[in-house]
Structure formats: structure tokens, C-alpha cells
Image (cartoon, rainbow, N blue to C red):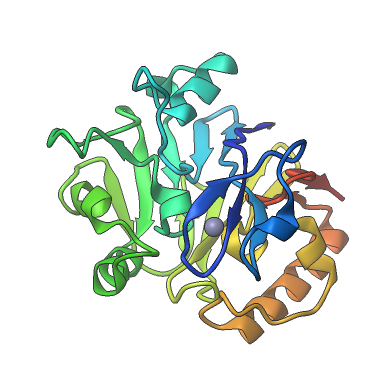
Amino acid sequence: MKIIPLSEGTFTIDKTKLFVPFDESSDDLQKRSKGSLLVEIQPFLVITPEDVLLLDTGLGFSDDKGVMQIHQNLMQNGINPSEITKVLVSHLHKDHAGGIEKDVKSGNATLSFPQAKYYIQKNELEFAFKKGFPSYLTEELEILKSSEQVIMLDGNGVIDGYIKYEISGAHCPFHQVFWIVDGGEKVFFGADEAPQLNQMKNRFVAKYDHDGKKAMELRHKWWKEGEQERWTFLFYHDVKHPVHHF
Ligand SMILES: [Zn+2]
């Protein structure tokens, strides 16, 4: 499998849940509000013999010319957005689901990956509309309710015999994680329940999780299993270590 992190940059986030760009060469973390976390935002492109997979979709920001950053990043890696065959979505918080669609503001929302199937947990979509702003931007999620490109998942299962998905439900109640098993390699995408390398090694309960204790136990379990079975971990929010091979 070929794995390419698609970094959208480094940001700080605090209790306002706004992502503020952070330049490590000139910005000072101490000057950001108390409790600010430093995070990378990075979806992953995974190319298998069967598929061109996208794992989560980033913030959905566009440049001055209106080109989406995620499209730009794909094209820089020689992939046209229409070549994506599957979009695997861990959950619908805005930093993971922002790039699902485009042009919602002009009233012509379309999915950003015209040939892809989008794999979304049915209950997560429902929960997003219950919970709403600021974690979820429901206006941007509306299109998912009616699109024929969306595959509504309900619980745990396997896609095409090689992509396993499981509801982990700790960061938010219907968060899902994925294992992609191909050619003797096992790639694990834990999204916000395994967001950074350091978090895998330390036991702590995070305030931003729906069930912080469960998230802690899951991280511990996956890290041990991953070590035994030599998984490759993809860390969506890690500034320095997007990919970890055991
Ligand atoms: Zn996140």
C-alpha cells in the first residue's frame, strides 16, 4: 500500500473550537489562549491495488482562487480528485468532514469527490444534527442525507473484504476506526481516538473526549495489539509523526 499524508498545516484549538493557523517558526504557543492544543490536520491518501482511498477530508478550506486545499494536495501527489474511489469518514466533526463537499455557500453543494463512495455511520450523521455547532457544521452535512454516493454504515463490518470498520465511540458516540489489510500489511486509522503518537504511549483522560476513560483504554489496547501484529498507524493530528510503522 502507498500511504501519503495530506497535511493542511498546523493549528491551535481551544475551547472555542476554532482552528487558528500556527506557524512554528514565528508563532508562540504561550501567547495562544490557556489550554490551547497544537494539532496538525492531515487526511491520508492510501493507494491499494483495489482503490484510491481518502481517510477523512480535512477542514475544507480553499485558496484565493477557490481551489480546495485537499484537491490541491491530491493533485500535487499526482491524483485527480475524481480518481478517489472511497472516502472513509471516521466522524463528522468539522476538522474531519470539512472537505466532504464544496460550494455550499453558493447554494450548489456537491460532493468534492465525484466518483467516490462515502462511508459514514448513520448514527453519526443523526447525532451531528442533534448536536450541531460548533463541533458540527450541519449546513455542510445536509448533502449526505440524500446523496447516492453515500453508504450509510450501521455498526461494525467489512468493506470489499479488506477494509474493516468498527464503532469505537469514545471521542464522540459514533466515531468509527478502520483497518485496511492488504498485501500482508495492516494499516490502522484511529482518527481522534488515536490522534498523535505521544498519546498512544501515555495513559491520560482527555477533557475533549465524549468518554475519555474509554478513549484511554482503547489507545492502550490498540497500541499493544499494533505492536504484536506490526500495524502501521496513521496519526491525523500529529505534527511530527503522521505515520508510525511497527
Ligand atoms: Zn479531530
